[in-house]
Image (cartoon, rainbow, N blue to C red):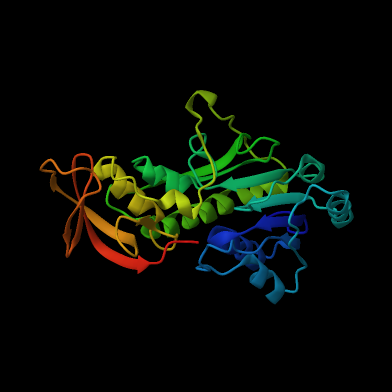
Length: 291
């Protein structure tokens, strides 16, 4: 790999950020600093953090709540990055920062762009009944996930796979994309493909409350939500039981016999009427409602 002396400033989080950072370091790349952030309070810590990896290698770690200040503009200028890589970093990287990288600035997004720009692309993909997601490395721009694509990898999945089964494959795809793209990034000559705006879609951030089940929807829609926010995410829940029930796994049952959506027709197993069919819970956890 050429130009290993290039000064890489790394912005990253999550399992993809951690594994991509480790790959760069194991490959002998010159990572001069790592920007990251803490896990959100409602999230489970299910991955090794970039912060831990960086500290083990004695690389400076920065965790600002925002980068939109003169302090951080000056800090990045002082660091003199040749290349900026953003891998699942959640904060906005302003142009005053990403424009300082001589070899360019690039972001890894967890979808097969231009579809599913924005936040939580894998979760949204499953919710919407898609059969694939992916990982795309693109030019970092002011607007989210709009830049020209350097490399990407599609990850297909089945209609009954859960997010916890698919997520590792998305991370592996991100790592493959970085491995393929890195030589051209360090050489300053990546081949760029503009995104097809006619195929673009955008979805926003999800919160734990977005896991509330609406049994007025079809059983397939409810099932897809359960698949999409199951472990390691906060889970899909309902308050029609007391206490609240988090449904981690389920299956679609037979046609409803006229029950109102949301009617509990069995407690063992927990079976609830949806708009068309029954939803049969296979793994349920009782939890008190959030205050």
